[in-house]
Image (cartoon, rainbow, N blue to C red; front, side, top):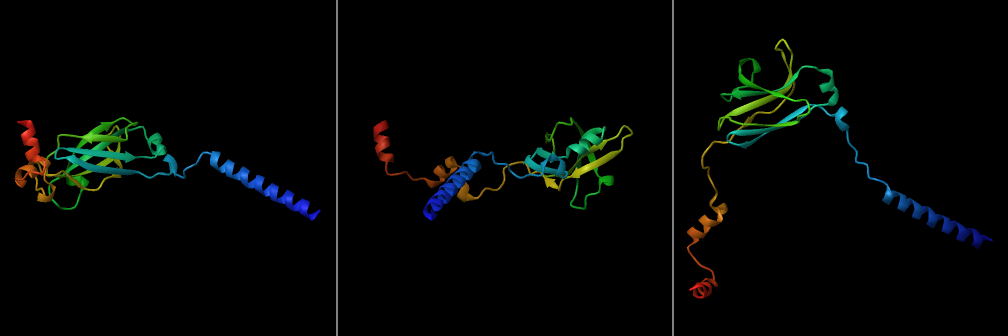
Length: 175
């Protein structure tokens, strides 16, 4: 009788573990995340080239739903390396649609620094910042320094001045 119950117990455990393995493999994998509601406001800016910046941001849905004002991307033009002061810095405003979460900013000066803020503009002209970027600088225009080790292929070929082993054969074949 003990042998019978041992066999039944082992079969039960095999079926149980088999079912659990099947269940775990077939269930969709849920990735943990905070979702839009728990996210905090952030604004990230990158220099694309000497005259363009790319900005993207994340604003919680409840922040956007609470305000009825116009969404604005404010671009501050920094002239020196001093501290950023919004009251004493020139700026341009870019009107945005609420669905927008990124923007390409063009026609900027090469070699200049910028700070961006995203916020709302009330009908009376009051700007309420929701997020601010770090300072970003556009690169200087023109040809920059290039490490000789990373020359483009054409320039490396011209400066090398030598041919490979197959060059003579290819030259004879092409004549």
